[in-house]
Image 1 (spheres, one colour):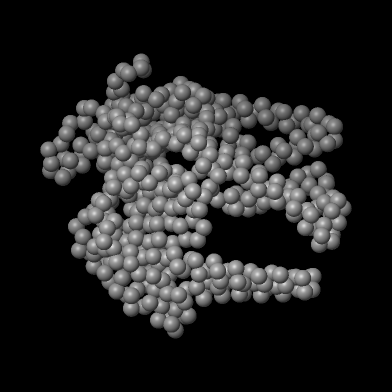
Image 2 (spheres, rainbow, N blue to C red):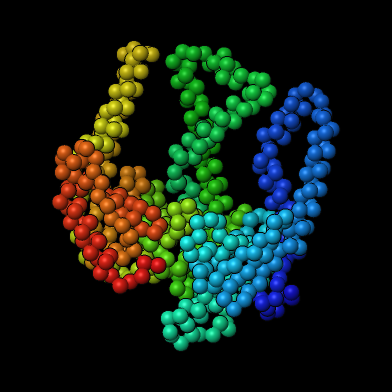
Length: 506
């Protein structure tokens, strides 16, 4: 198809011819991801033994490559997509022939993705999310950019046309496409913004992942090359407590540096050149370096929003914003759209375009019970502190009791957690503020709530307390340790507002 030439979707079409290379890449990637330990063992053993390896592996590799090439060609020539008056049809299958029918009115969102392989060939992957789908969305891979935009515009306009027709309104003929990039982006993250975001990310989480991966990887490598790293380290630093302290002083700064660098790189790769628009009846997002994502959030599908700050972000005057859409539990993580850094002006503009400003005003606030602090202190402070102090005493005597300092530290932490809990409620929405290092603020319109439940542990029953669990189509939230009469009144009020609302939750 020539550039800018109209596409007749009623005729079966194939993907771009470059799809053959994309499919071949996916074949090889899946094979390597499944068998990389075997390949690694073969390479390392070959190098340590000085042998070039068994030629049979070379023949196996050639055979797999030929099968991948043939499979890619067959997959390409057996793949078609086209439309009828009411449906999108996809026919595909390497061995077993499949025909997928997607009704236009079931389409929820249409997004595009460009992995590094797509960017190299100048093609995109079109992802179609359907209502009620618990599996991965339907995708048409390796399309030319212009073709993908035409398909996206056609499907969205057909969906809108059918919705207007079914609601007995005067339908707008699906003749012109909507340009989602007509206005300047509300948010455009620069390299400076990404550095600020990377600095303020959760480095502890990354450090734990590195430690876990490193320990597992070292165990595998030691077995392959027959080298005991732990014995070597003990021989270098000894087994005395002082030597362990010196070792920690050597390792921790290096670990923190590596953690910072990895977190910064991950932030740049994931959110590179992120742009956010307020467009039509929703919000458009685009971001990514190696994999370029473009997604559209329909305003009607938004179930709740969450903005947060930690002390470092507060210095930079940045907020992190998460927008939660209606989705199945299996797709919950993917349906959360994250804007890792925005300033207050952009945050307020996005909040105002999502929900009316008056919904955020004139709230009545309550707090969680102070007894919540005692339970946090018991579970996370007293019991672990006593156990660690006892084990430390058995190993090092009186110096090992320094672990008991954990108990007053947790008391201080629990006090901050309880003081920061704020619950706001008005006729339109529920507002929750909570957190320790990162203070999160959740905003849930009342009519989006699908279920409200009270939960009580034995301790809560004996002290007339309860936890309120609130469920929406994007997941659940809990308000812990409210006085029982307040929890019951809150539950009854929320259920009344939900049942009396005439607004559609999606």
